[in-house]
Amino acid sequence: MAKAILINHIERVSGSSIKEIVVGDKSFKTPHTIPKFQIKSDVELFLKNKDKLPDFGGIAFDMWCFPKIYQNFNLGEEQRRIDKPNIRAITPAQEMLEKRIVFLDPNTDTFRYKFNVGYEKKGDKKIWYTRQDEIMNLRGFPISIKNVFLVHGREGHDAAWKELEGRSLLLSFVLWYIDQNTKYGADIILPPAPLVDGTNTKMLDIVASINQIAKEIVFEETDAFHSFYLPIHPDAFKEEIRCRRIMKMIKENITMNNLLILKFFRTRTVLNESTSRARLGRFLSSLDQLKKSFNEMLAIMTLDSKSEGLAMMGNGIDLTCDPLGGVNDEVQFKRKKKKGVDTGDVDESQPKKFQQHGKYLHPGLREFISISDLIDSIEPDGVLPHDCDFCNKMHHRLTDKTGATFPKRNEWNAGRRLHNYICRKEEDEWLLNAIDQGNLKATELYLSRRERADKNLVDLLP
Image 1 (tube, rainbow, N blue to C red):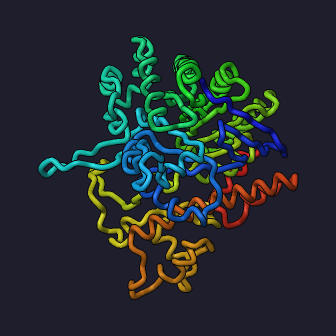
Image 2: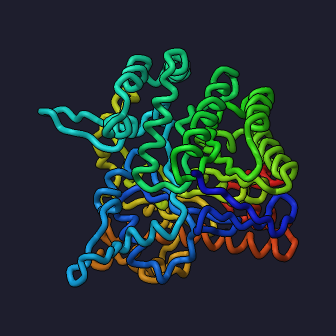
Image 3: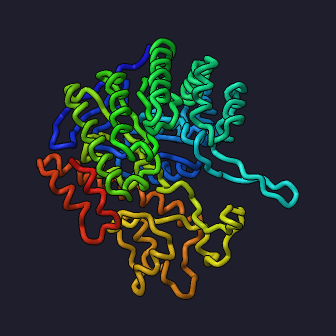
């Protein structure tokens, strides 16, 4: 039988509230940012630094890469002590997962948009493979469903999902995802819902059907907990009617004591346009009103919210999930293009030593910036704008003209991922204190500071 989620409401101020979310014997308080691990070294990173990190009650993974991480750490195998073979000994990685609520992002947005993750060389050619390929090549992925997506391509995204429904393939799709979740120990299961933009009510019906199918199966056949999952395309905020359709579908299908998980896809596109941004703000306020109508017995989470997560937790959202890398690509070197098409070759005009150094979350700007831009901003003294352990170790090294102490790629990328997470948790604590003091006006002042890169986030507040 499914676990019963408990939502204990503690305090509310304006659009933010403090809640305790309990799933079985695991829990955390909101507002809360959950780290998303996307590469196997993220697990090692957190294990190595667990005594230095702020508490985190949950961990999220991407479906396209978690099986490899899982196998790498033998997370599904019982370890036996050599001296006492009858006693089960769990690995440190297993222990970390067993103590925290585990989520698997279904990554269904990859069926509409292309995300390259690597390539294979065949002769002189590079054959790129994507996150969608990684998912569809996992063991047991239904061949009939794979063929539908391959035939329609990304341009036929909606048509593919409608065909899945028309051919009664949604059930097998949901079953495969639930099997993957239970196999890898997920506590809260997100079903494979399609990315929607509100233009097509049929697609919204499919989202509702998938969530209902998943809810029944999860309840009857697993020990996990079901969430209502809805990924939203940025075009949803181009027209008010689209937002209303989506909100109507949510209200008709969500229940008390539930977790609504949203993924606002490519939010930057929405934030850069004033009317779309205003609609997103009103949409968040409607979500907050929905929580009030359920006497706060509803929790709402966003996936991959990045810098806008703080503003969202100031208006209706209880918890967010942020990739440790902060951006889609760990490596942010420029690529050559021929007639606008990515050739896959590195653009040598960017200094080689910067090509594989990932972006740094600037705590003042609240924006990810390249290492070259960071160096420009801290010259000549070389002091980084933060005082976490990683930044303290990096002071003066980036501006060392001799290059003797300049960090190597692996050291930089591991450390800056920890720094990114610590910055997010500092903002969680800041928001929690603001709620305790009954002063969410401070959130607006915080987001609108002169040095902030994106003051538009204020428009998301109530």
